[in-house]
Length: 78
Image 1 (cartoon, rainbow, N blue to C red):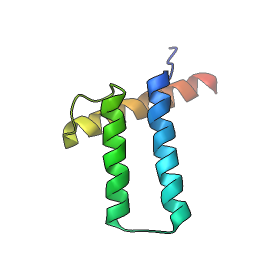
Image 2: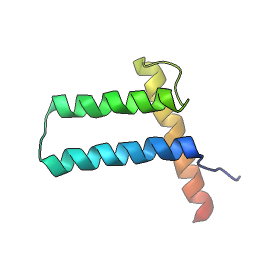
Image 3: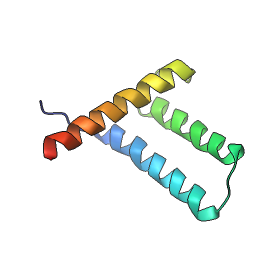
Image 4: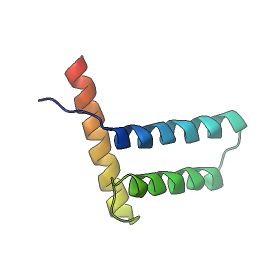
């Protein structure tokens, strides 16, 4: 099965990586920072059409779907 990660998937993944890197680089920890990362992730998932709304169930389903596609795409290349 050929699964591809599209441009919007990559934008969300790059956003996650950038936000986590910034979080780690600042040395700040705590719920406030992680809440900001969560807000940005929800915003990106909606912006790039991977989620319809920002309910917890929708966000969980969108991340699950994105993760499944990423694993499948990487598995196709292994």
